[in-house]
Image (cartoon, rainbow, N blue to C red; front, side, top):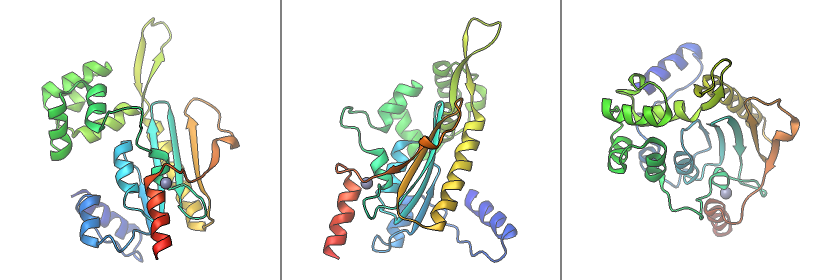
Length: 239
Ligand SMILES: [Zn+2]
């Protein structure tokens, strides 16, 4: 439904553009497409490190990524050739923790792990009870979460920070809706840079309450412990 609506809007705005919709998840799409046909450029605006790793594992030729995490936002572009990082280099599996996505979400939401697995797999909306559990953990009203898929709720929570308000001794949670907007704009800027070409992979991060400086944009180099980069170099060697 969402992809069909987006296709219609894009076609209305850009009559010359050929748009094809794929109402399926990325794993299914790549399986149908065939893994011998690499994705040329992937633009990712996803809500978890796990989802970004899933994109990286498809070994796209180029990737543009945008993200929010609390009071930080960022965007990066990745072309894993000539020593540049791939997307997976920025989302290495953490060796110091045994937590998978379900365990992480359990810690963040308080919802039972078996329910989280069901919520992620089915995409069903949160029940009133689950919404109350999450809302009480984050100190926010529950009603806006009822019926929403967990994957839609997490970005709203992840772009939330704690602020001290005047005349109020308590620190309150504030959703930084503008953070997602900034991340989207920075992702768009990265896409424009990527379309111009140039080899180096680069990333930009920003604290949303601090002044931007040129030092926040930096080159991203391949990491020896990255499984995707080592696979890519094996493929290149055997080609
Ligand atoms: Zn890599």
